[in-house]
Amino acid sequence: MKLKKQLTDNRSYEQLLNHYLVEKSLADKLKKANREERKHIHETMYGELFSKVPDHPRLTRRGSEQLTITANKDKFSLIKNHINKSTIFVEFAPGDCRFSYKVANDVDLVYGIDISNQQDQNGEVPENFKFIGYDGYQLNDLESNSIDVVFSDQLIEHIHPEDTKLHFELAHRILKKGGKYIFRAPHPMSGPHDVSAFFCDEAEGFHLKEWTYKEMGGLLKNAQYSKFQTIWSKAGIIIKLPNFYFTITENILSLFPKRYTKKAAKYLIPSLYGIAIK
Image (cartoon, rainbow, N blue to C red; front, side):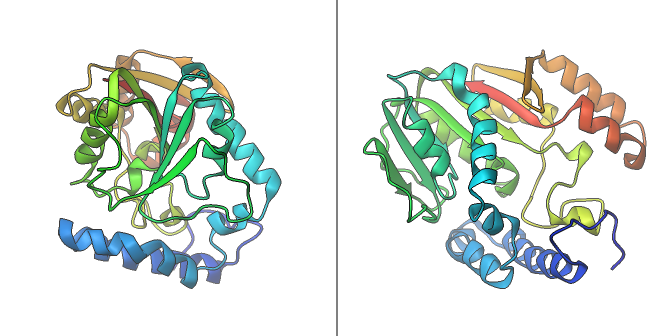
């Protein structure tokens, strides 16, 4: 297959192609599955991916203390103005949970919620942290109206499009009135942002859907959120901008072929970053 993007320094063409083919195969299986079948696929998909792609960036990042520190610093910048010592905090898809461990220093209580337990076994687990495993659909371990802040980073694009509204409804249920769901995800106009970027123009791997601001605004309204605060963020700079900036920009960029708008979108709409308020 012909490359559409320059090779990275640390991965060969063969490694990237293997990653792409494995991820696409698993993603195709997930897309075709019904909800009950997806529950079972969720339990094993990442284990299968990592076993077949041992050079996966998520695995190599775990081995680098500096990369972890940098990534966690970036994520903390997204939430730091929304938490305090009395905050009860939830992170969906916390991965190795090292970011949740960091947040635990600044809040009252932290829950890490994921479909598989990937906790760092070498790190010291804070006393005010609890991991909750779930199937992606049912979350019975948390009471309704009990959480101040929910957070996810690079998660929404991995959820099956038929399940995304359900995910936000689940978060809405556990949030207190006025509580916030802070999330960041890749924007499709500068994508695709999974391994597909090296071989095609649309996401075909584990990014099952990369959402626009217009699409997300409609979904959150249907999920009964009272407000959607939209934010521009790049290289540590965070600016609150009205939703119409993003939707108008999306409308204008959609008028042109993607090959012309992709680079512009990286600056005009760096990511899908917002705060859904109950």
